[in-house]
Amino acid sequence: QIALFDMADGGSGGALVDPEFTALCDAELASAGPAAALGFMFKEMCRTGYIAEERLSLNANFAPQSVVWRTASPEGEEASCTLEVSINCSKPELAVGVVRKSTPLAPGASCVICPENVGHKPGLRGWSLIVGGRPFFLQCPPYPYCELHTVLVETEHTPQKISEQTLHDLTDAATQLRGMYICSNTDLSGTGASILQHKHYQLIGKRLPVCDAPTAFAVSRSSTSGDARAAMLDFPTAAVRMTAETAVAVIEATNALLDSWRSVEMAKAVGTSLDTHTLSFICSVQAQDSPASSESPGGFEMIIIPRTQAHVTSESMHCIKSEFVGILEAAGFGILPGRLKTELTQVLLENQPLEGELTKYEHWLQQLNISRKPDHAADLASSPIAAQALYSSFVTILKDNSGFDACDHAIAKKWLAQAGFR
Image 1 (cartoon, rainbow, N blue to C red):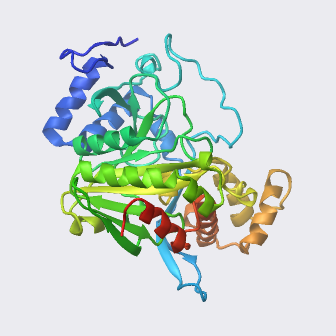
Image 2 (image 1 turned 180 degrees about the vertical axis):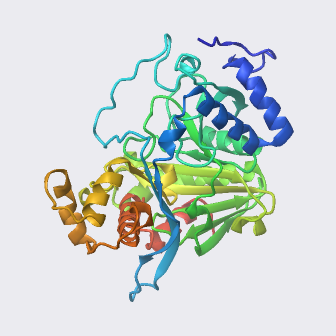
Image 3 (image 1 turned 135 degrees about the horizontal axis):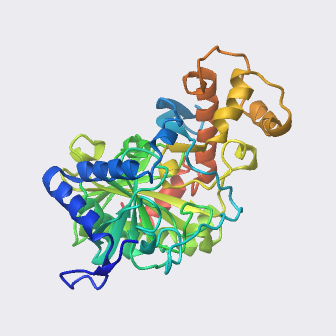
């Protein structure tokens, strides 16, 4: 087992996880940058066997598609956005309400992501960093969702809690790891994080679809900390793209939106209970080619997605995804369970009878008016019928999980106005 020991500078008040591996990652970061350092982590975890690379090759990745999510009506024009869907055959499916199977823990560990597990789980290594003035460490998940996917874990076993401190963590991590997207799930069950007892963030190198969604309307906020601009996005899930030139400005403006969303007034407007309200975030220091970079060159981009426990995936979509919807999915990157690769091949490509495990798809086929006429595709990922079925389903799932109806600009404007945006 790899031991923990006090930080050499004594200023962190914490411990360094896996010092030898940390030194290697630090050197890679200094010489080649964040993407190279995280790529080094991934390769090492494949080499040690912690990540089973051959399992990743089984995933079915569908090409990104422009999807119509709102049809034209007297209330508004047709709207479309780009989404992406994958079937992850490495990740075990965990349905909402189902108790996770207990996993053997390292001595002294309180949960599966505690630092004591580094060096105890075969092949797992960790990279220590200081984020928000506190010790954290990066580790690869055993089943990465996308490019450079890693998990940023606070070294101390402390509960997941969305607060102003969350925003300090996100902006600090984004500053240190420029070009990466630092993602925070929520702090309420059924709306994001699967491990609520230990604070952690998701880190990826992939720009998610919500980041480039069209703007429905934009407002701004001025303060002594600096100006911030908020674009309400034309996207199936209600979301805001915030831009500001400094961390202080983006933290202050985002915290105002957090307070506004967690207000009695917003709970009343949405028709939900106040204690069900929470938020998800994606923070980055803007790349020069991002849509927001022209609005605030070199500054911060914060995607803010309101969530509530009252709005979750409808039962009719549980055949496609019965798990909670996390931040990457709310941002337009669908991560669907591995069983679909077999079951949808049987339903859509082979036109097998809807018997046994396949009976659950009968209502789904009718609801979305999905054709079962074989399209002679070589596999599920290359089937136009399968792609249409999954993207239609994903749009429905995103709408189900939206904090409020993304077409309801009156509620959106109320939320923003309460936070001082005009």
